[in-house]
Image (cartoon, rainbow, N blue to C red; front, side, top):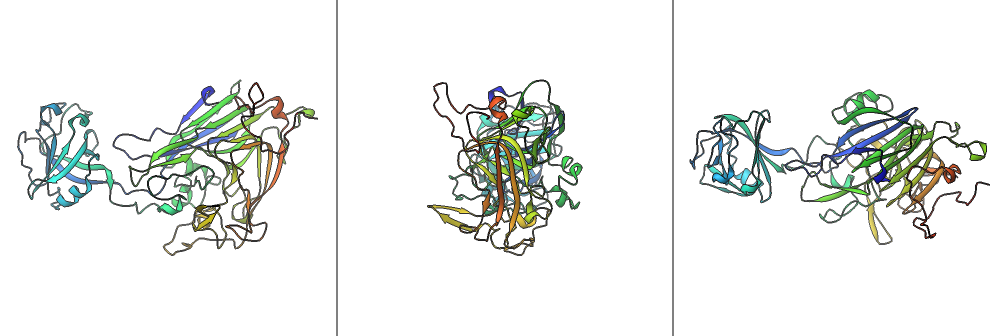
Length: 509
């Protein structure tokens, strides 16, 4: 299906860029009559590091072969940045940067800078407007007497960009930035701890796995609350669609006259709406990214499709039932091919907070979860005793049972400093969300949980946590499958994928 995509939304543009931290992108597809709206937001998965370590200096463009560095200055050795020469040639002998032990404010930063620089770190020197930037990969840093720092680098990695076509001017204010180093975790990011977002060992080797704890509710999603408006995407969409987290503005795409395959490349998807047309949505299996707090650690975000509200055909009944082929059939179809899981998100329309605001979800789709399952977002919940990321071991596998944030969602609540509940609001022993009314089909790598209760890691009385099932096979799929949806068998009848849906049959009778 990816190879036959009629529309591609890139969600990996901000990954593995030289000199910059990795940033992930979330895509929303909101189906409406005549087509769909698409929006993208950027986000970071905690732990989120603080901004790169940076220091203020002024550039000494008057020193050429001078191994000295006046207080508060820095310059290359040899140095040919005189405000007019452009570009400097690293082959002329520039193979280290001389930095004063004292920054522009007179602070002695020699030991601090040396401790922060490791071989392989990307160093950037830029002016205040970012219109002049030199960058290189450091080999290391050493003291050069008591008043200087020598930062060695590989000349082949050196680059310089200037919008004006000139070098640094004498005494031009610059920043020394080690883009590979931070000074700890960002203090302004809530829930900025490893255990709230990862259920694998923090050993630099293991990574997030499909079908286990996944997330969509990052800062872009909570901006209606963070901004003080006390709302969410369902009640104040303009606030969410115009926030600083927007990467691609909300844009309408017409359904056109032919079936469409929407490929979200390198990211997760939020999905809702009324489907008018013939569509398949497909993601990658997973996307690797460098962890924000440590560029040397690689983790994975799976290609999950998050159902944040009903997703139904334009001609379906109010109950969510699809028109049977014997009654004329539907004019619409939707296929969901998730590299990870298809997840019913913990949102107010989907019955969050024990149905405090709404209940149930209606789904018209043919679902294929390649490496995960069709699953409810049970690990984000409002159970009084089972909402925190406590460890649980079963069948030789240890995981955490929840993400800790359920009591602070739907609507957003500020995380307090009082553990273990951090000021959340909970619903006792029940977070029952209603019924999943599915008219379609399901193929999944591993059966996903829709409801959790006694026994197990959520030992509460039934109904407990999650949804009841009301599944119906959509007979239209035998006559009109989603565009480029994978076949279940080869031409010689070898089974490729095993059907795990209700209503599988050979005819519509």
